[in-house]
Image (cartoon, rainbow, N blue to C red):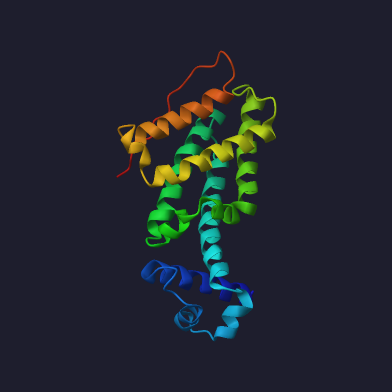
Amino acid sequence: MRGEKTRLKLIEVARQLFIKSGVESTTMNDIAIAAGKVRRTLYTHFKSKEDIYWAVVESEIMQLIEKLKSIVNQNLPPEEKLAYYIFHRLELIKEIVLRNGTLRTEFFRDVWSLEHAWKDIGQQEISLLRLILQEGVDSGAFEVDNIQATAILIHYALRGFDAPYVRNHFQRMAPGREEIRAAAIDLILNSVRAKGTVCTKYIYPDSH
């Protein structure tokens, strides 16, 4: 228990230092001093600065997963739940990256490196999506032949939105994020909607 508390403290201290000074300028010694620990303690938990950097990224994504779990557990119709999930996922990713300031450059520097952070956590998101899809199939709202494969496809489709959405690259082609979100929700919902069901538009305006 104490070891886990120390690890979590080191991750949070590293996150704050990465935001303040940048990942490249922060040393393992800086992290140890700021955390009030000797370097040996730091190296007990993390082999390198790269390890602790990815621990920071993973901790942020784990917070995202916990918030998404709360959405899945809400008592909503499956179609509305999936729309709500997509909207909040896009906004939560943006919030995580923007909150971490100078970390955002590192976060998007090499898109393939993000596979490291998503390696285990991605399976959790696929499980959440599978639950929503199963609810939809059971209620007759969705028509999905292969729930597992569809959950995987939606997961990777949403991940494809992450970087351009946060960087607002869509702005050149559309008026704003609200329209992009609505289009993303429509695209995914239309792919799973049961034939003959009423097509509801789910538009969530920007909160700021």
